[in-house]
Image (cartoon, rainbow, N blue to C red; front, side, top):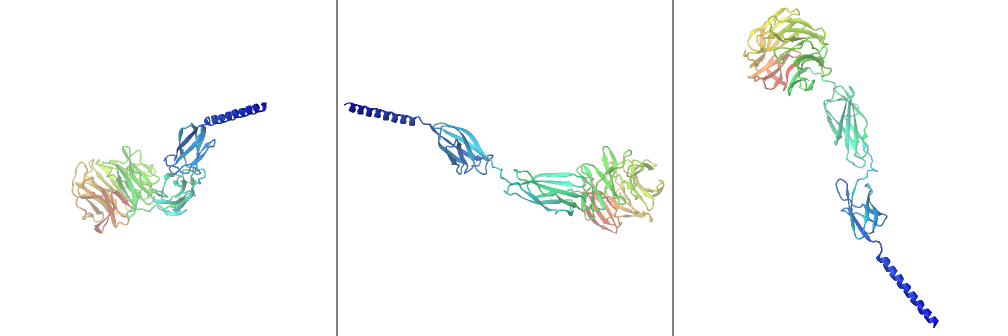
Length: 500
């Protein structure tokens, strides 16, 4: 009886225990951690382009997924808690975001990723193509060409550094996307060095080798002239074919150029404040020096004023109102040579070594009452070419032997306060015969021939022709003395020529 009770009690105890165990297990399942979801998108920083195949995972690690073609990812059944969410792909910089997962909640995280450059290689050094290294006779306008490349085909930009050996002047051309660079206004007969730096926007720039070239020698141009640019006159030189070189800056008013081949210099006039001064420079426009200072160049109309070199190039004769001065080209030795007796102004000068004579054009304050005369070094009158003629005259120039004199004269005899000329012709006066030849018989009606000079061989003359309206463009022509119906245009928009 006791055994039966004992066994029954034992089974009761076991049943109670099993029931308790089952209830305990049931309570554990109901109270387990909740689950949440993380979803979002991965895009490229700056463009928002969707990024595929990016690995997105949590830390502590619960699951890992990869983005689809639209950059979308979803991490499901993530236990509630705090995580570090990472986005990784081989060619991108890894990104991390802190995230808290809540039961039955969705958390959205958007990653913006940058391209990784850790393994990007720098560009290859550029290779110069033209001018070839140590090239000679390169024009003052040319192109620098090179080749550039990058191991990853990254887009390259270039920086070109150009150095001038003559004065160590450095020019830098940056942010170039082409492999050709046009350069101009190089100095003549000068050695240049150039180098190309390539940049891929990721690595440090890579420099090419340094290349060198030599520009052409300055051309032996025999003609100089002035051209109006904006409000200033600018000086140029040219050869007989019309190939020109600019000699003076456009921000300065420089005019009336005169060459001297003995000293290889060009003299010219330049406006300095309220005065006009005499300057000299090399034939290539370098080494500009002011000659006059205490006594300026002056006359009734500065566009008409002219001066003259001594043949040896040591000094220059120039006018100041009614006085004629000589000055050494270094600015020393200023001396008064001549003064008019009637108060007329000296406007133009030319001298001749063969005869020792000086030709002068004088006029009153309005530019009229003109005389063209010659004097000797002592100021004694030698010949009178014209006097008492109505209208304007000028442009005097001796032949080499001094037997002839070129000048221009308005044969209309017109005179007005604006010094307008209506029909200016080129005249060739012969001192031996006392006769004058009109060289402008084939001139276009309504125009003026002005600023006449002999060519070096005296077979031709060079001169300016322009409409007599006083405002039209001036052009430079050449005409053969023995074939005066053949007038050849040399330069448009040019005046005040000199041909030595």
